[in-house]
Amino acid sequence: MSGKHLNVVAHPLIQHKLSYIRDKKTSHNEFRDLLHEVSMLMAFEVTRNLPTEAVKVRTPLTTTMARRISGKKLAVVAILRAGLGMVDGVLKLAPLAKVGHIGLYRDPKTKQAVQYYEKLPQDIDKRFVILTDPMLATGHSAVKAVNILKEYGVKHIVLMALIAAPEGVREMHKHHPDVKIYLAALDQKLNSHSYILPGLGDAGDRLFGTK
Ligand code: URA
Image (cartoon, rainbow, N blue to C red):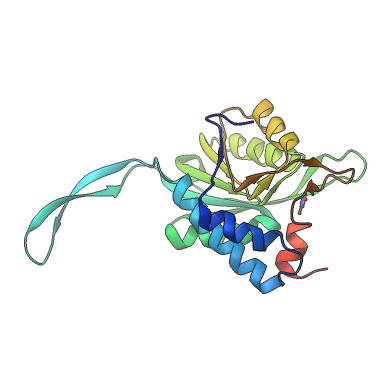
Protein backbone atom coordinates (compact mmCIF):
# COMPACT_ATOMS: atom_id res chain seq x y z
CA MET A 1 0.00 0.00 0.00
CA SER A 2 1.60 3.27 -1.10
CA GLY A 3 1.00 6.18 -3.42
CA LYS A 4 1.24 9.91 -3.53
CA HIS A 5 -1.21 10.31 -0.66
CA LEU A 6 0.61 7.91 1.63
CA ASN A 7 4.12 8.80 2.64
CA VAL A 8 6.02 6.47 4.96
CA VAL A 9 9.03 8.43 6.13
CA ALA A 10 11.79 5.84 6.16
CA HIS A 11 14.59 8.07 7.45
CA PRO A 12 17.01 6.03 9.63
CA LEU A 13 16.75 8.47 12.55
CA ILE A 14 12.98 8.12 12.58
CA GLN A 15 13.09 4.32 12.29
CA HIS A 16 15.72 4.11 15.04
CA LYS A 17 13.66 6.22 17.44
CA LEU A 18 10.48 4.37 16.50
CA SER A 19 12.07 1.08 17.60
CA TYR A 20 12.42 2.53 21.13
CA ILE A 21 8.94 4.06 21.03
CA ARG A 22 7.48 0.61 20.30
CA ASP A 23 9.51 -1.09 23.03
CA LYS A 24 7.39 -1.81 26.11
CA LYS A 25 10.47 -1.23 28.30
CA THR A 26 10.61 2.45 27.27
CA SER A 27 9.47 4.69 30.15
CA HIS A 28 6.82 7.39 29.84
CA ASN A 29 9.24 10.28 29.84
CA GLU A 30 11.47 8.60 27.25
CA PHE A 31 8.40 7.81 25.15
CA ARG A 32 7.33 11.47 25.31
CA ASP A 33 10.78 12.75 24.35
CA LEU A 34 11.10 10.28 21.49
CA LEU A 35 7.64 11.09 20.12
CA HIS A 36 8.55 14.76 20.28
CA GLU A 37 11.79 14.14 18.35
CA VAL A 38 10.15 11.94 15.72
CA SER A 39 7.37 14.51 15.23
CA MET A 40 9.96 17.19 14.62
CA LEU A 41 11.75 15.03 12.06
CA MET A 42 8.46 14.17 10.37
CA ALA A 43 7.42 17.83 10.29
CA PHE A 44 10.54 18.47 8.23
CA GLU A 45 9.15 16.10 5.57
CA VAL A 46 5.52 17.28 5.89
CA THR A 47 6.54 20.88 5.23
CA ARG A 48 8.87 20.03 2.35
CA ASN A 49 6.68 21.62 -0.33
CA LEU A 50 5.62 24.80 1.46
CA PRO A 51 5.92 27.68 -0.98
CA THR A 52 8.81 30.11 -0.54
CA GLU A 53 9.43 33.58 -1.91
CA ALA A 54 12.53 35.56 -2.69
CA VAL A 55 13.57 38.19 -0.13
CA LYS A 56 16.50 40.55 -0.08
CA VAL A 57 18.73 40.06 2.99
CA ARG A 58 21.60 42.24 4.13
CA THR A 59 24.43 40.08 5.48
CA PRO A 60 27.27 41.69 7.44
CA LEU A 61 29.21 41.81 4.13
CA THR A 62 26.74 42.46 1.33
CA THR A 63 23.15 42.01 0.23
CA THR A 64 21.84 38.80 -1.25
CA MET A 65 18.61 37.19 -2.31
CA ALA A 66 17.35 34.43 0.00
CA ARG A 67 14.11 32.49 0.36
CA ARG A 68 11.47 32.60 3.07
CA ILE A 69 8.24 30.65 3.53
CA SER A 70 5.40 32.57 1.96
CA GLY A 71 1.65 32.34 1.61
CA LYS A 72 -0.32 29.94 3.74
CA LYS A 73 0.50 29.90 7.42
CA LEU A 74 0.51 26.72 9.47
CA ALA A 75 -1.77 25.31 12.13
CA VAL A 76 -1.25 22.13 14.09
CA VAL A 77 -4.47 20.46 15.19
CA ALA A 78 -4.15 17.68 17.76
CA ILE A 79 -6.73 14.95 18.12
CA LEU A 80 -7.03 14.55 21.90
CA ARG A 81 -5.40 13.19 23.68
CA ALA A 82 -2.49 11.31 22.09
CA GLY A 83 -2.20 13.86 19.27
CA LEU A 84 -0.89 16.31 21.88
CA GLY A 85 2.35 14.33 21.95
CA MET A 86 3.17 15.39 18.39
CA VAL A 87 2.42 19.12 18.68
CA ASP A 88 5.62 20.39 20.30
CA GLY A 89 7.83 18.68 17.73
CA VAL A 90 6.08 20.58 14.93
CA LEU A 91 6.20 23.83 16.92
CA LYS A 92 9.94 23.44 17.36
CA LEU A 93 10.31 23.81 13.58
CA ALA A 94 7.37 26.19 13.03
CA PRO A 95 7.04 28.20 16.26
CA LEU A 96 4.50 30.63 14.80
CA ALA A 97 2.03 27.89 13.90
CA LYS A 98 -1.27 28.18 15.74
CA VAL A 99 -2.58 25.18 17.64
CA GLY A 100 -6.08 23.71 17.64
CA HIS A 101 -7.61 20.80 19.53
CA ILE A 102 -10.33 18.34 18.63
CA GLY A 103 -11.58 15.96 21.32
CA LEU A 104 -13.07 12.66 20.18
CA TYR A 105 -13.97 9.47 21.98
CA ARG A 106 -15.00 6.13 20.60
CA ASP A 107 -18.60 5.14 21.29
CA PRO A 108 -18.25 1.65 22.78
CA LYS A 109 -21.40 0.39 21.02
CA THR A 110 -21.17 1.88 17.55
CA LYS A 111 -17.32 2.15 17.58
CA GLN A 112 -17.80 5.51 15.87
CA ALA A 113 -15.89 8.66 16.87
CA VAL A 114 -17.98 11.12 18.87
CA GLN A 115 -16.88 14.71 19.33
CA TYR A 116 -16.73 16.20 22.85
CA TYR A 117 -14.46 19.21 22.34
CA GLU A 118 -13.16 21.59 19.71
CA LYS A 119 -11.12 24.78 19.85
CA LEU A 120 -9.57 25.97 16.62
CA PRO A 121 -7.71 29.12 15.53
CA GLN A 122 -10.17 31.71 14.16
CA ASP A 123 -8.43 31.87 10.78
CA ILE A 124 -8.13 28.10 10.48
CA ASP A 125 -9.67 28.16 6.97
CA LYS A 126 -6.67 30.17 5.71
CA ARG A 127 -4.08 27.84 7.17
CA PHE A 128 -2.27 24.72 6.05
CA VAL A 129 -3.31 22.25 8.75
CA ILE A 130 -1.15 19.46 10.10
CA LEU A 131 -3.54 17.14 11.92
CA THR A 132 -1.75 15.00 14.51
CA ASP A 133 -2.66 11.62 15.97
CA PRO A 134 0.07 9.03 16.53
CA MET A 135 -2.15 6.02 15.83
CA LEU A 136 -4.24 5.73 12.66
CA ALA A 137 -6.14 2.59 13.67
CA THR A 138 -9.72 2.26 12.36
CA GLY A 139 -9.47 5.73 10.84
CA HIS A 140 -12.79 6.83 12.36
CA SER A 141 -11.26 9.60 14.50
CA ALA A 142 -9.11 10.95 11.70
CA VAL A 143 -12.04 10.94 9.26
CA LYS A 144 -14.24 12.73 11.80
CA ALA A 145 -11.54 15.32 12.58
CA VAL A 146 -11.06 16.05 8.88
CA ASN A 147 -14.85 16.37 8.49
CA ILE A 148 -14.82 19.00 11.24
CA LEU A 149 -11.90 20.89 9.68
CA LYS A 150 -13.59 20.87 6.28
CA GLU A 151 -16.80 22.24 7.85
CA TYR A 152 -14.66 25.21 8.87
CA GLY A 153 -13.57 25.60 5.25
CA VAL A 154 -10.04 24.26 5.65
CA LYS A 155 -8.72 23.28 2.24
CA HIS A 156 -5.20 22.04 2.87
CA ILE A 157 -4.89 19.27 5.42
CA VAL A 158 -2.25 16.61 6.00
CA LEU A 159 -2.49 13.87 8.60
CA MET A 160 0.70 13.21 10.54
CA ALA A 161 0.60 9.89 12.38
CA LEU A 162 3.31 7.66 13.73
CA ILE A 163 1.90 4.24 12.95
CA ALA A 164 -1.10 3.20 10.85
CA ALA A 165 -3.01 0.02 10.18
CA PRO A 166 -3.97 -0.62 6.55
CA GLU A 167 -7.63 -0.43 7.65
CA GLY A 168 -7.16 3.17 8.83
CA VAL A 169 -5.36 4.23 5.68
CA ARG A 170 -8.13 2.71 3.54
CA GLU A 171 -10.80 4.52 5.60
CA MET A 172 -9.04 7.84 5.17
CA HIS A 173 -8.50 7.33 1.46
CA LYS A 174 -12.17 6.40 1.05
CA HIS A 175 -13.53 9.51 2.81
CA HIS A 176 -10.77 12.04 2.26
CA PRO A 177 -8.68 11.08 -0.76
CA ASP A 178 -7.33 14.64 -0.89
CA VAL A 179 -5.61 14.38 2.52
CA LYS A 180 -1.99 13.25 2.42
CA ILE A 181 -0.98 10.86 5.19
CA TYR A 182 2.52 10.87 6.67
CA LEU A 183 3.62 7.89 8.76
CA ALA A 184 6.74 6.49 10.34
CA ALA A 185 5.41 2.93 9.79
CA LEU A 186 2.55 1.08 8.17
CA ASP A 187 1.86 -1.92 10.41
CA GLN A 188 0.17 -5.27 9.74
CA LYS A 189 -3.42 -5.05 10.97
CA LEU A 190 -5.83 -4.28 13.80
CA ASN A 191 -6.54 -6.76 16.56
CA SER A 192 -10.10 -7.52 17.78
CA HIS A 193 -9.97 -4.45 20.09
CA SER A 194 -8.90 -2.20 17.22
CA TYR A 195 -5.34 -1.89 18.49
CA ILE A 196 -2.62 -1.79 15.87
CA LEU A 197 -0.37 -4.86 15.56
CA PRO A 198 2.51 -4.85 16.26
CA GLY A 199 1.96 -1.18 17.17
CA LEU A 200 3.04 0.30 20.49
CA GLY A 201 0.02 -0.24 22.73
CA ASP A 202 -2.13 2.67 23.87
CA ALA A 203 -0.35 5.84 22.78
CA GLY A 204 -2.22 8.08 25.26
CA ASP A 205 -1.43 5.85 28.23
CA ARG A 206 2.20 5.50 27.23
CA LEU A 207 2.53 9.25 26.70
CA PHE A 208 0.87 10.35 29.92
CA GLY A 209 1.65 7.37 32.15
CA THR A 210 -1.98 6.59 32.84
CA LYS A 211 -1.52 2.84 32.86
N1 URA B 1 -4.94 3.86 19.67
C1 URA B 1 -3.80 3.55 20.33
O1 URA B 1 -3.37 4.27 21.22
N2 URA B 1 -3.16 2.41 19.99
C2 URA B 1 -3.60 1.60 19.02
O2 URA B 1 -2.96 0.60 18.73
C3 URA B 1 -4.79 1.96 18.34
C4 URA B 1 -5.44 3.09 18.70
